[in-house]
Length: 391
Ligand code: G3I
Image (cartoon, rainbow, N blue to C red; front, side, top):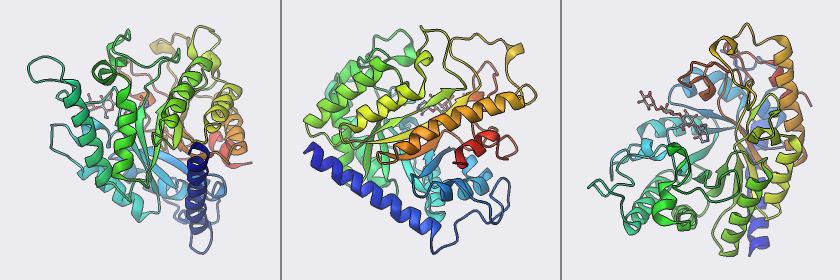
């Protein structure tokens, strides 16, 4: 089952992408002729053209950026993910009332511009509406009721976007750094999983089964961060192996890849392990199960794990020097060399944003600003862009 299912899925994904790639680069004018804000000038190659034989290059968009960055988006990218607009709290803020208008506008834009859509995220321990885990009397909802609520949400959402969303992050971040399942006992409140507290690990398989029943053609992903941690990648592998042995319909693994300009020098910090080699091990480990692998939330922060930054040391467009820009470019280059080398199992690379003027990494209450993407705050290509497109 595993080998047969997996080879079928890989063939489907290659056919799907090849078709999109061919359509994009042969026979029809590849978007990008506009020289709008950041769009590629006539004759200039674009990311989606240069990667049409490798994998779709995607970007996370929000309710504003798919419009404000439209030229850049349609010139260079062939896939989008909604940053927040398809999360539980966005689509079902109150029980039984689904609010699809914003996400639908983004999906309509995508289909009008030949962009694939990744759905993010059906089940996550964060960004859930207050009613979801509540019994309405100040206590936790029962396991039976929560299971019904999860299944109703997934069925409604996946059915709504059927044929428009080709891949879903079904379960997001269910494994901890040590490889164990995320529970409700985690130290930080925003790290605790009420899904696990009330349903145990059963919620994971049920989420995938429900999504598959709603759209048997959608590719279903498990998505997580810190995949370069040896213990964590082993924990994810073991969980996925168990799911596949139980014939749970999992088709791929999303590596978020929120990277830094260099690994941490502090061996007690997770990003000490943030090396190409460690991430490559995760790609090889997960794909050994017959699963597709996608990079789903790529950015390269200027801030290094384990280093304490005060306001005076926050980066600005002035202190983001040429040297730093080229170090960031080198970091992107070394990871993309590995991504391309594994094009047989990597079926998508998505950046967590389009340009540096709109990144989640500059939205912390500290006021810290970051410059993690390929295009600068004026939508212009950075050395990091050159490092990714020139190969
Ligand atoms: O919608 C409210 C708005 O009404 C309110 O006025 C505003 C100010 O409080 O907050 C808005 O909600 C914010 C939401 O983004 C939508 O903009 C939340 O405060 C903010 O915390 C939330 O941040 C998102 C974060 O996930 C939440 O954990 C980021 O934009 C988003 O980029 C980030 O993405 C996650 C992936 O989904 C999973 N992987 C990690 C990645 C980075 O954390």
